[in-house]
Amino acid sequence: QSTSKQMDGMKLSNDKPIQIQSDQLEIKDNEKKAYFTGNVEVVQGTTTMKAMKMVVLYKGDPAGGSSGGSGAASGKQDIDKIFIDGKVVLNSGQQTATGDQGEYDMASQMLTLTGKQVVLTDGPNVLTGCKLVVRVDSGEAKLDNCGKRIQILLDPKSKPQQ
Amino acid sequence: MLQKLASNHEAPRNNGAATGTYQAALVHSRRVKRLRILLPVAALAISALFIGITFIRSYLPENLTVQSARIENGKIVMESPAIAGRNERGISYSLTATRALQDVTDPNMLSLENVKAAMPMSGDVIARVVATAGVFDRSADRMNMTAPFEVNLSNGITANFQSARLDIPGGFMESTDPVNIKTNDAAIVAKSMKISDNGKTITFTGQVQVNLTGSALKQQDNQSPAQ
Image (cartoon, rainbow over all chains, first blue to last red; front, side):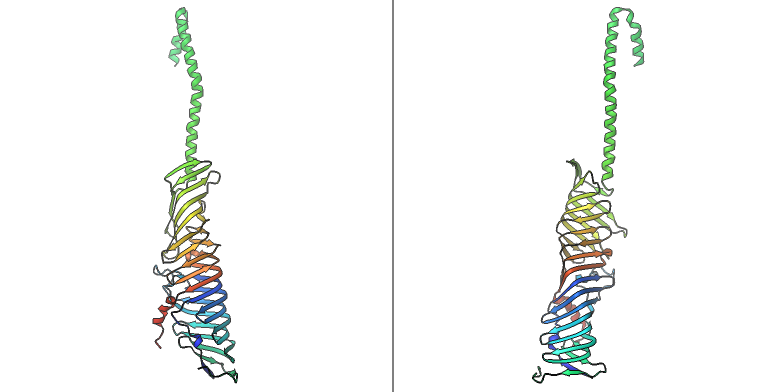
């Protein structure tokens, strides 16, 4: 079973600038990967994502390809996938989601948060499951409980925030 | 020289002539005395000059061309020195400066003013370095940038450093002071940075901040399936 919720806050719009902070960034051009490690924080508008580690995979020319293809910093590479690891906290406005790992696929615009316990709080309501899938372009989120019963704690006073 | 001596020898019998030959002998011995000093001195001077040239020649690296060089209070001052060469991958690197000062006691260290360097990085990306000051270690082709400088990579990245160590042929650079790197739609700021294995790995450490403008992601827009 899974419940779906509208998480408008989790929308990642493609035209707002993104700021990434971390203790260290290592760009390995031949692997086409950028490793952000240590207190990673990604901010776009009101949406912030925190984690211990984030690995950005970018497409772009194979290593040693055409002259333009070198260094993610050159921005010409398209981001392919982002892997997030370690105390992942996704926060936007009223809604917060926490988990152990996360994966964001640029092409399908899907952010998947997994972990022993994925907790989605929406204002006073708390939902727990083991996998949360958010369609970042529409904000639609689906919480999956992988077989276990979903625990939902609803605050009677909370009105549906549609 | 000998025939003259022999001829003087028969002359003493007539008195008048004796004083003449005595005079000649005096003149001769004075000339000999002078030559005895002059000749060795001349020899010394020539050999000193020869040693000097080879000494200076050995100071300057083979691939260094210099417009003019003079020695000023214990330092060799070279005008517009230029070093060029190819690294093991055959990509050329070059380094020019308006002035280079070389301490006579430490020939390997060249302190340079107004440096321009072109360094091969990964792929066929060339890093152009412009700096006001730097110390070039001739024995290892390494440059120590002691003043703030800028690096322009031929793929559109510009980087500003406060200081850095560069290994020119190896394409290795390290800066332990704040750096900031800009491209047209991304900017990275960090407390320190290291570029290794020929520009293939770039490591920023210390309060790293990456700003991606919206356009950096825009390219993805047209790829993702339309809603």
